[in-house]
Length: 423
Image (cartoon, rainbow, N blue to C red; front, side):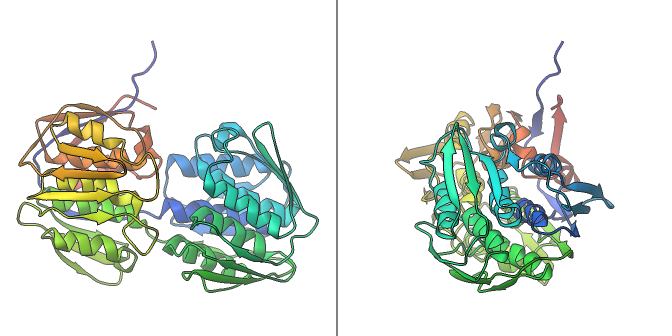
């Protein structure tokens, strides 16, 4: 008999109260792990969240030839002295798009890389297109055959790269590649996310010369080689935002430690607009919510605007808010798939194109729902916390890709939540 797939069962109605620690950011840890490919020396990466995507990335790096040594919980020493296989196979990339982040470092360090296209040969996916265009501008010869990007470059050359669209992984890949290129690379229309700054800090500690990270123009002066270092991954702003949205929806009083409020201005503004009382310091945020939230309109856009990765969680909050909210998704075409599941819980939502109109109701109803992606999973967890009765969320392996021990943290805050089945 096969094991049942993992599910989360939530008994709704408990307010969230207490203190928890925020984990390291997945979207900062993955590029930092890839950056270790740029040097023969050992690099120690600290505050790594123990997530499915991180495990997949570590497996991929081991396959390439990186020696990985765990050093305490959430710390790894990576040594890429010998790169034995310059390939990222489809089996790895299909489960984790961030695997594309080995392309730039491998090309810069080893002069060659074979990377599977995410989801087969779908070059129409714009972000991957930007990676390829940028590397070609730096002198790489790139062909696409049988669903793989095959890239070759004796020595990458510094270049001026103008990104057609803002892409975080594209900016990261080109920034890493440029650290070992000959001459100066200027990336224009670069992504401005805090995770870009975190990667730049890691690369600078390894000896790279980078200016402008966090702005839309990044300048990288190539150096002959990089060296080992220690780097601590920044806190996860999306995990932080998810717990704050949950507490705002569930009459919470929570204290989050080891986080950074400065990365969350747009999210904190919206939570304040909904009626939450928020205080913050250097490494902490305190949120208290004494009333039913007010509806809040939002439109997703690249950082520093409201993040697409928080849209689904705020939709759940709006489902039980006072009034009508309009949410417009501008980043991803299929980012409203959670709407159908929320409607199964009696939410009043209408979708017109990329816009959802949510009429708040006093109470959601617990039922069986299915997670469709990582952030949709988080939205269903929040919906379950505020619903009347029992909610069972199926396919929660999506959650394990981006939230470290979410049910333990929520239990610690007073939620009645348990996991059944195995991966």
